[in-house]
Length: 126
Image (cartoon, rainbow, N blue to C red; front, side, top):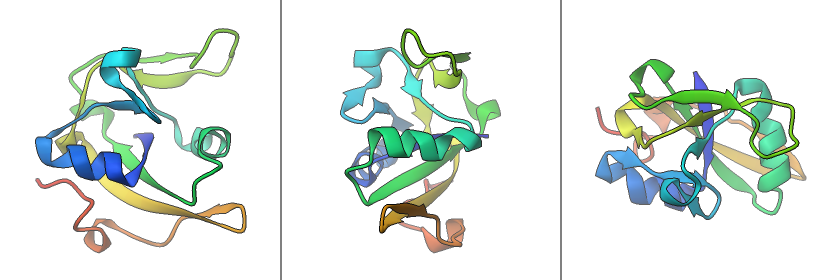
């Protein structure tokens, strides 16, 4: 599994279309050419670096086997050695197996004990 951090409004706007096309905060797949994703050990660092001014995000858990586009592990920017998974196409909402709300309280990101049954509005239709 790989993960994509999403703004709630981006997911709620695109999930009904069957295809998610946001690359990263404020940028689309068409603008960037791929969708930024993370491995589980990279999620918190990405949230701290790019979303530290927010108190709520969504974590989209993506089944790599359900993605038809290429997924390439590569640096997110020139000069960065760490590799991140990048999806070179849209994410079908059927590939998103779980959507979890992630909240930051007192500067710490906290993940509630929450499964898909507790997020019916946010989880994609199957």
